[in-house]
Image (tube, rainbow, N blue to C red; front, side, top):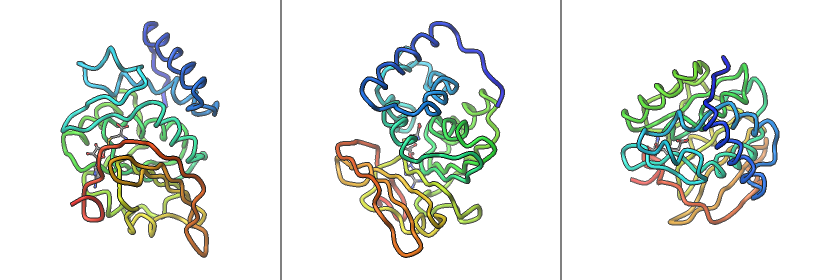
Length: 221
Ligand code: SAH
């Protein structure tokens, strides 16, 4: 990835956000901190939201959807423990910011990211192009079905709330792979699961998150 130049006012805002996220323990990993420094969130928000790009808040994008809150993105990314060269599936591309962060951490690996709204798939593709990111494939479709063509995946991340994890996604996860998702009703728990040769094991679980719903065949109808 080519290094992009970041204006001083945004650089200061990014540094302030990083201090906040570290103090509130949403950010503890140096590699994820470096991703945050190098993948500027303001390139992924609509122009009307630019002044809030470095607030620790979700922001409206299009189609009643949101770009996730920075603290939630850093926590999910840390839990996923991304390694260079991995094959990753994301459900819910939205703005493309989370995809770009994964792309930075995965180095020579690849991200497949599925979005159901054509307008958002296009928005994300344009945002990723601005940063010259070429290892993220944005796919238009129902992410609850996964994307078997490029499976198995070392990591799967669902960035929308589901009542249960769609079965096709568990099928497409590699052995010892990790999957993270917000699971629940109006308030969700962030759940990190590992697929072992015998069973699915819960590694982490933390309550009180709020995401937009996962809609689709194996999601909300
Ligand atoms: N990761 C995004 C967060 C977007 S919010 C970001 O960093 O900006 C969740 C996204 O999931 C929304 O864009 C919504 O349209 C999408 N979504 C919901 N159900 C989906 C499904 N079944 N398949 C694909 N995308 C879905």
